[in-house]
Length: 251
Image 1: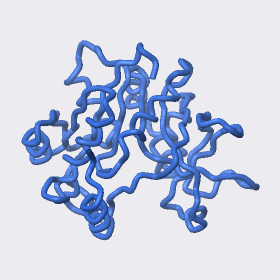
Image 2 (image 1 turned 30 degrees about the vertical axis):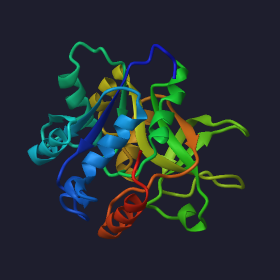
Image 3 (image 1 turned 180 degrees about the vertical axis):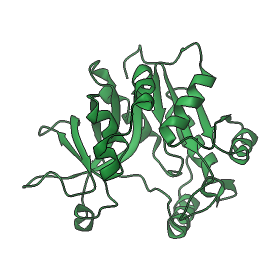
Image 4 (image 1 turned 90 degrees about the vertical axis):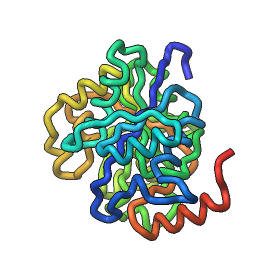
């Protein structure tokens, strides 16, 4: 990570969820899920961590654990908007120039994976950085719930420019496919620009927010990591995470 970087991690979270209501407060080993994510972000050691909370109960849970939380308008349309609002309140003097948007449903994420999202920003031409992992399971290749990133990743390289994101199987032809991991590192000005852009045609069609940036000429590069962190979207996911973290608590 280049020395000039001054990152801050923001974790957007709200209680409204269709498949798993009150998900951020789901109990995992005696602590709410959002607290587990906060602890993993702190362990990454790249800068301060705050939770961009759409509900007071989330903010209270984080503060009770010793963390920092910013209340945001629950009507904000996306996690990116929530992160931007929280950062502008947290850092009006703009001391931090990189904002990492970490999903609040990744309680078992490896802190090293969080650190990896900063790597593409070593190139000053990159506006937004994100992560991918090579798809290993055949079923994922055609699963519309697995977002694929089409990127120019040369052999032996671990960072490439993202050309498109899709729920379809892209690109065609022989070669690896890449599972997009929805963690982002924005340059501060890029985040401000992004949340001010109108929703894009492809964004609406694919239901993928990152396409808004590409449609408006912003550059996204992705770093390749070895595994996809397990997210929690359903009660079954939650039970699996409870088993995993019961065996492997972070140091």
